[in-house]
Length: 140
Image 1 (cartoon, rainbow, N blue to C red):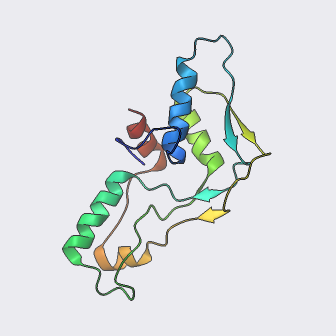
Image 2 (image 1 turned 45 degrees about the vertical axis):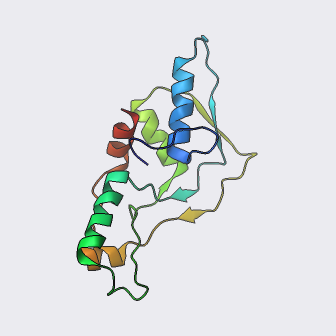
Image 3 (image 1 turned 30 degrees about the vertical axis):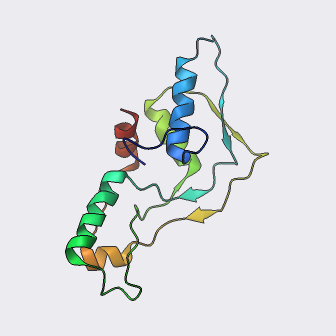
């Protein structure tokens, strides 16, 4: 995720899709805007990788190469898992919007977090953008 992401609500990933919904809610002229429905109970854990950190990782991979990896590649991501609830609460800490978790919908796969150990060891990859900082930059 990051500036320039795909914010099309029909096919965007979780962060840009959620930001689109927040913007729509904020632009709504209704006195009592409805809550944004977030699928699941918020417990699913995801690795939200900021685009600048990934770009830096790609440059490092090109510079150092990844041939020393057993598979010939390394994983790039944040390496940190956040629940969907933590994501929503972080957005809500600097954006005003109403939301509700829709537990009648699936939360999806319970946990998806990249193991960036090899990237750290082989190419000195070190993502530094916090979730809050990345979300604020993306919102701008």
